[in-house]
Structure formats: structure tokens, C-alpha cells
Amino acid sequence: MSGTHILYIIGFMGSGKSTAGKKLASSLGWSFIDLDKKIEEYTGMKIPEIFSVNGEDQFRNTEAEVLRNLSLESDTVVSTGGGTPCFKDNMDFMLETGVTVYLKLTPAQLVSRLLSSNDERPLIKNLAGDDLLKFVEEKLAQRSEWYEKSHLILDGFNPDIGFLKSRVKSHLTGETGDKSSFIQ
Ligand code: S3P
Image 1 (cartoon, rainbow, N blue to C red):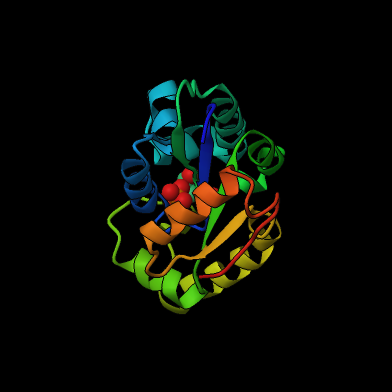
Image 2 (image 1 turned 90 degrees about the vertical axis):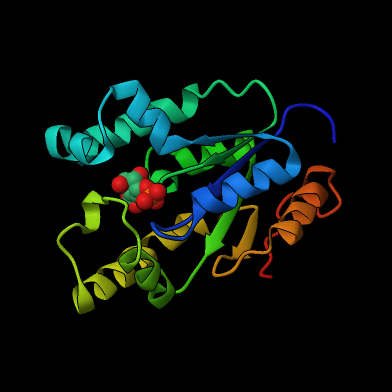
């Protein structure tokens, strides 16, 4: 592989994007960037604070701006926020500037992950039980339109990083064509 490569990890909240992204970056010997952390650095505010003080629309403007301004000097894996692909033509931007990997999980798997996570997530902060499952089902159904455009799709429940790495390499060297979605 030659040149500068960018890999965007996308997927719903709780799908394990940061964990998989970090592992993949270390396995490839690439840098890792967490988009939400970059947004926090840029604004000087935590994500929940941005939502409560500025509202979701402003968060989406900032998210799109920070995504486009990432200084990706070398090969880099970027883990995005769950909503990133679904606003401001961000999915098209990522498809054009890198390789996208969608970590795909079922609503039930996502809910179980979200319930055991300590991260503060403004969109689900007041939801539990059946309400949370209903929210995840509905939101995932809306967002799948964007997620499913991804170059690569991986079963996110227990992602095999070695397998993902080999698929990414095949994709970057053009062995699998331009749009090679797959499920492990
Ligand atoms: C969001 C997901 C969050 C964060 C923000 C909005 C979403 O990131 O960007 O709270 O719209 O799904 P994670 O997917 O890392 O939780």
C-alpha cells in the first residue's frame, strides 16, 4: 500500500467504534483519531454540554466542520460519532476521502452494550428498558440508509480485527473493487 490512507469507522452508538478503531490502527501501525474527542478539543466543551448549551443542530455543524478539518498527515483510522454519516453530506465526504467500515449490530446487541457503558450519551440519557430498545430500533432503521452505503460492512458484535485488517488491505490495493461490502 502506498500514499496516504484514511479509514473511517462508522456505526450506531455503542457499536464499539473507538475500541475497534484503536485496535485496527495499532495493528496497521497507523494513527488513531476519535472524532468526538476532536470536537471536544475544538469547542472546549464535553459532548453532552454541547447538546445542552448549543443544541443538536449546532453540534452537527461543528461535527461536519471538524470532520473536514482533521489534519490527516499520515495513515489514520478515524472513529466517528453514531450520527456522523447521517448529516451534512458527511457520508459522501467520507466515501470520497477514505475507506469506510460499518460495524453492524442488531438493536438488541446495541441496547445491551449501551446499558453496560458508562459514556454519557445525550440522545439516550432519559431512556431505559423498552423505550431504549424502541428508540434504537427506530433510529437504526432511519440511519441504516447511510450506514449501508459503507465500502465495508463488518459484523460488529465480536469483530475480528485481523480479518478486518486483511479486508481493508485488499480494498486499498484494489483487489476487491470499489464497493465491496461484506459480512463476516
Ligand atoms: C451521537 C453519537 C455519539 C456522539 C453524540 C451523537 C449520535 O457518539 O457523537 O452524542 O447521534 O448517535 P458515539 O456513537 O461514539 O456514542
